[in-house]
Picture 1 (cartoon, chains in turn cyan, yellow):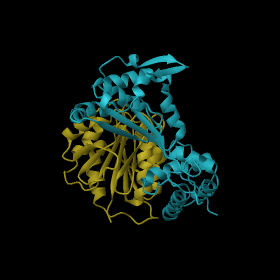
Picture 2: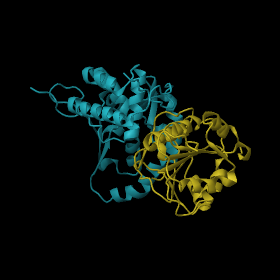
Picture 3: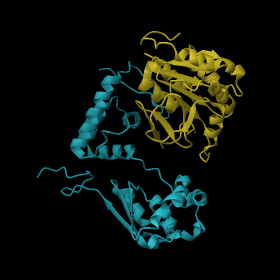
Length: 232
Length: 197
């Protein structure tokens, strides 16, 4: 069988040994994504193709496999492999006040509009470990809108969601977060929001009273499917 | 069939080379241009503003899902990788590649995969070897390679690495890059399997 190894910069992959067959590879990727959707309920079928392809090949190489089809076999038959792939395909990179320009713009253009509402609901879809949810809570409090707000934080990954609820973040990132906070137009001193505790930075839990968190799970077998997929 | 995309990679010292290149292109240059310049993660939109001052083309920072557009210079934003999809861009926050994000290799590789023989890759002045592998990938997929002559480059490391990775690439002095790109852009894309001349 022809071995197809993609050259993916930054993953240490070896250069290709066989002719690249883009049409065949596309078929394989579409079959894999269709299989994932039907079996697990996660729908990656409309994701940006070059982006998905790159991440699939990283996992393929990590597992010592040689094709998308080989990965499909593992993914469909081993839920642990699906969990790994889920982490590969979802963005878990986050930080407090990440992309400070966003928060500046939010303060300048969105907050004035929100002030005119009696009640505010904000949904952080895919909140990962929660840093940006806390950031929004701080911003709302500084702008005097926290008491009329409810913040919904959801993620398909329960592990990161638990960390979000706990509110303890790595102490070594506080300098970076302080810089972000300042550039995001923060009006107080960032260090007021946390204390060093439990080996990390524990954030002011009063920031979480407006939070609702939930993870999407299959209601039948309680696994990580995004919708009910069990046949009773 | 004509070319569909021209990707340009450069690092430190690239502003002069970029303004020379882009300044020499007409406003109706129809092939979408993508510029990946190494930038510190805090950098603001100054690069786009400076480039806009230097060219008649429309300069804009890439946002996720932006469509490829003729008469336009799409600039990679700081701290994101740019992937070339079919007709549009996707941004990625995967780890830096060889300490760079945006990485020239990442963009060029995706341009080669998505557009193959319809891609043109250009490597300009720079202080590291990012882009050499990506340029080789474009050529492997049937596309064209143009490299700024290192003798005309502020820092020759990047073009020299590219020349080593792609011995068949055209090496062009800075002053001739724009006219040469215009000439190439008007050529028919060569059929797959033939060596690019």
